[in-house]
Image 1 (cartoon, rainbow, N blue to C red):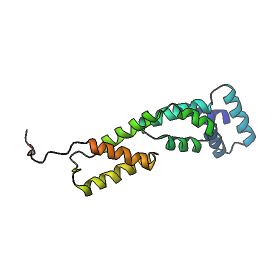
Image 2: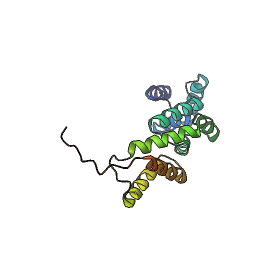
Image 3: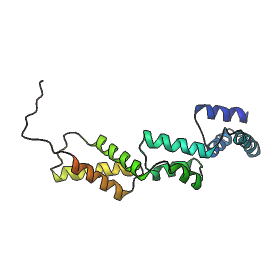
Amino acid sequence: MAQAIVYRQLTASAKSRLQLARKLSERNIPEHVAEAVLDKFEEARLINDADFADMWVRSRSQSRKLAKGALRRELAEKGVDQETAAAALEQISDHDEEAAARSLVERKLRPGADLADQAERDKATRRLASMLARKGYQPSQAFRIVTEVLDAHPAPDHDEPLNRYP
């Protein structure tokens, strides 16, 4: 029964050893049975925390644009040890992380925002820096990137009338 549970879990998606151990525990599989089954799966290389961590980092950094700090926390929650997590996080360069943050800010910048108005600019800065912080970026890095993107953003031309009817 324990093997069937592990096979089912791995069919759905890759999992760390700790995630599978927790699932077996939820199903009331005795700990000694769970450990024996997990050991066999590890020997067969069907469970490999290093491969799982590499895949997790690649996937989450590309799809969610998460910073290394957030990815490190997620891997820890999934039972991946610090050394394995650090090795997986090496695939993300500081340049890649910063480029991801810039693209997020540019994508989330509201079109037509009047950044010449200081109150509006401050509001946009707080909103965008908070979004980056939730994704694991350091506050100083988040504010720097947001400021740089806002500084590079062209101001809307108020002299040009809005053409609502093409």
